[in-house]
Image 1 (tube, rainbow, N blue to C red):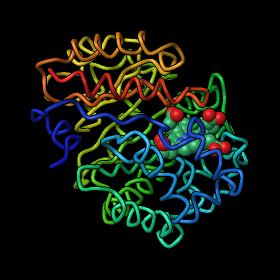
Image 2: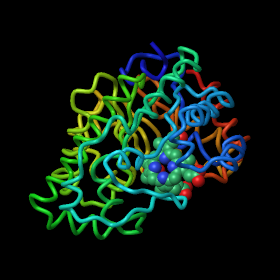
Image 3: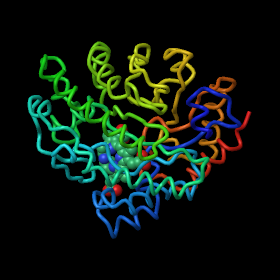
Image 4: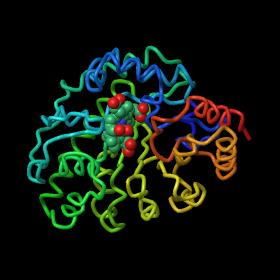
Amino acid sequence: MTRLLDALARRPVDRPPLWIMRQAGRYLPEYRELRRRHGFQESIRDPRIAAEITLQPIRRFGFDGAILFADIMTPLEAMGVHVTFDPGPKLTPATLAEVADLPDLDLERVANVAETLRLVREAVPAEVTIIGFAGAPTTLLAYLLEGGASKDHLLLRRAMHTGGGELDAALDTLARAMHAYLTMQIDAGAQVVQLFDSWAGVLSRELLETRAFPAAASVLADLDVPTIYFAPGAGHALASMRSVGADAYGVDWRIPIDEAWDTLGGDVAIQGNLDPALLLTDPTTIRAAVDDLLTRTAGRPGHVVNLGHGIDRRTPLEHVAALVAAVRGGER
Ligand code: CP3
C-alpha cells in the first residue's frame, strides 16, 4: 500500500501524502525545455514524451502521486471532436443534440494514453501512486457548447435550465465515454482516478444536485480503484456532493478544510486545499499555511495535501520545495 492509497482509504499514515494539480507543467524549466521542441498535443500523443513529462515533477520533488500527462479534452478527440490548444482548449461550438450524438470513445485512439501509463509504471518506484483522470460531463459539456473557455459559462447554464431530454442525453453520452476512458486507464495501471469538474461551480446548488453530481456519479460508478471528485467553486453544495459516490473530494481554498470536511461527512477522504497564490509568496508564509492546514486535519486519517486548484506557471521552484519540506517535516 502506498501513502496515497492509505490516505484515500482513511488509514493512518506516517505523514499525509502530497501531490499538486498541474504538477507536470510550465512552472518546471524541464517542461518548458521539452515544449520548445514538441507541441502540446504532440507531447500527449507520444507516450515516451508524455511519460517523461509525467515523471519530471516526481524526479524533482518526490511527490507521492504521479498524474498522467494529458488533458481533459484528450479523450474527446477519440470521439471525433477536433480540439486545438492556445494554450487553453479551442473547438467548434456544438449543440446539445450534437453532443448527445457523439460516437462512443474509440479506445484504439487513446491507446497512447494506456502506453504512457505503462511506461510510467515501469519508471516510478512502488511507493509512487499513479493517478489517472478525466473531465466530468458538466465541464466537458461547458467546453463543447462554448467552443473554449468562458468567464460566465452562460451557454452551459442556459442548457442546464432548458435542455430537458437532450441535456440528459448529452450528459449521458459524455458520462459513458469517460467511464470507458477511466476503465481503460485503470487496466493500464492507474491506481487512483480523479474526475475534474472545473466549471460545475458556476451552477446553482439545485442544478449541481440534479444534473452535475448524478452525471459525475455515473462516470465513477463501479470503478475498481479509489476515486477523487474535484469541483472547485462548488462549496455551496458540499453537503450534497457526497452523492457523487467518490472515495475522496478535492476542495478549493475558499473554505477552511476542517469545515469542508465536516460538511462533506466523516466517512470520506479529503484533498486540498492551499491557495495556489500562496506559492507566489515566500517560504515563511508557505510554511505557516502548511502548518495551519496540517493542524486542521491532524488526528483525522484521510487527508491528501494538495492545492485548491492547479499550480500557477509563475510559481518559483524554491516555493514548491518549501511546500514539500513543510509537509515532510510536518509529521505529527
Ligand atoms: O500535471 C497535471 O495535472 C497533469 C496534466 C493536466 C493538464 N491539464 C496539462 C495541461 C491535467 C490534469 C489537466 C486538466 C485540465 N485541463 C483541466 C482540469 C483542471 C483545472 O484546471 O480545473 C482543465 C479545465 C483543462 C483545460 C485546459 N487545458 C486549460 C484551461 C488549459 C490552459 C491552461 C493555462 O494555464 O493556460 C489547458 C492546457 C494545458 N493542460 C497545459 C498543461 C500543462 C498548458 C499547455 C502548454 O504547455 O502550453
